Image 1 (tube, helix red, strand yellow):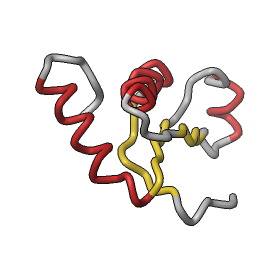
Image 2 (cartoon, helix red, strand yellow):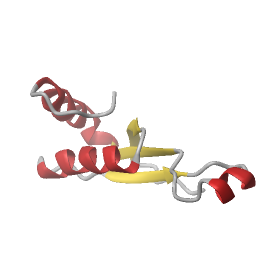
Image 3 (cartoon, one colour):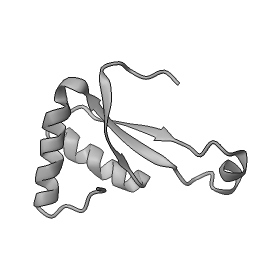
Length: 84
């Protein structure tokens, strides 16, 4: 898998829905944010759980990482339910 050198993982969301919420919060604040989805590697798991994501990594540009952390901390402080 090719990774973009200027993107870093901010955090991992446990579900696609949780990842979408995090992406929306960051993007609403003008921070480019991307979801990198990983799937289980075991063929059996893929057959049985083809719609279930193993993890959603929320990635942001390296130079916006601190700002993104601040935005999510403020959202959590304000009572938004986000993955920890």
